[in-house]
Length: 60
Image (cartoon, rainbow, N blue to C red; front, side):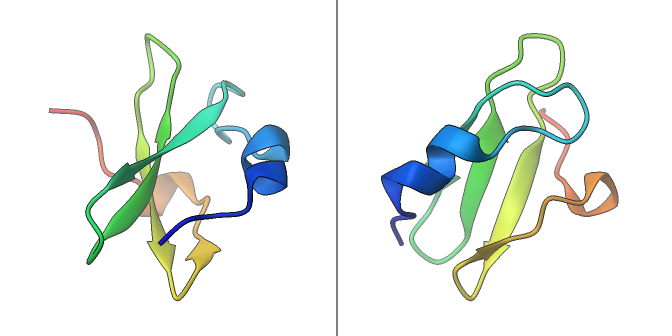
């Protein structure tokens, strides 16, 4: 699942305001924070990014 490039340009991590990049697998796509101190991974469900901190996966 690929998001439109213009979306990745405007979406930021709600916690630290760093840029997001696509990650995860084809079955479970995610948007991953590029911030060094944050690194949260937000799920993408049915093509819609869920940018809620409570829904994000913490880095391992």
